[in-house]
Length: 321
Image (cartoon, rainbow, N blue to C red):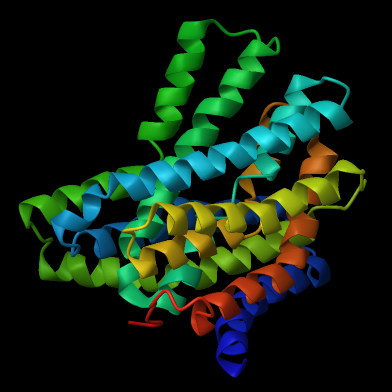
């Protein structure tokens, strides 16, 4: 159990420090923008590039893993969408935000830190693949559902928005460039490589601190009946479905299976709140989903870490290598 605590507490400790700073120190919220810019456009892309560029090419084409994890996440999105439709009396815009809260893990800010600290560099490729293809689900489905529900945009405009969000996202661009470097064997000059290494080392602590501050600055305005249902889908059902599906199809590297389990066990992403604000829909509920989900995940993610580190089913995962 000590190993699990040592893995989980640094992550939640950094989030708590950020949350406490957000509550105790009155600073303009606009100042957080530069830190978020550094994380999203500089530090995390450097991490993805550095890790993927050193990856053997044959590890980048395991499509059975991609299909299974993406289908599992999409199934959770659909289930949470039905829940949102029922609780919001057929309001598709609100249901789209609810669906996102039920399936969108914090795979950007928390994902790489949790998986790499727990499973080592072997978790790099599955982490990047889950990130890219899970994000594609939300970048496609949310604009599409908002357009269907009456957003005043032409199909062409919606298609352009979707394409831009997928192919111009800094994490996905860094993943593409990293894969290209792995395929070609190209490496950056030594001084650039050292800068990228410094940037990647800053990714996890900065991201977790910023996440804590952001959560601390968001008021908990309203707790509705749909929230515990959505969080049960996100924090309990999602990881169970992902793990069971990968275990059932067989032939998947145990480290990849456990990586997908950890990614699915993460709390709802801050992107849930960002999308709600962007579309002016279900904002108080989105804020509550992120805040309460982060708090509850202290227990659920810790349980997932115990499962990964103790391997009670004997699937043969080696932790930290």
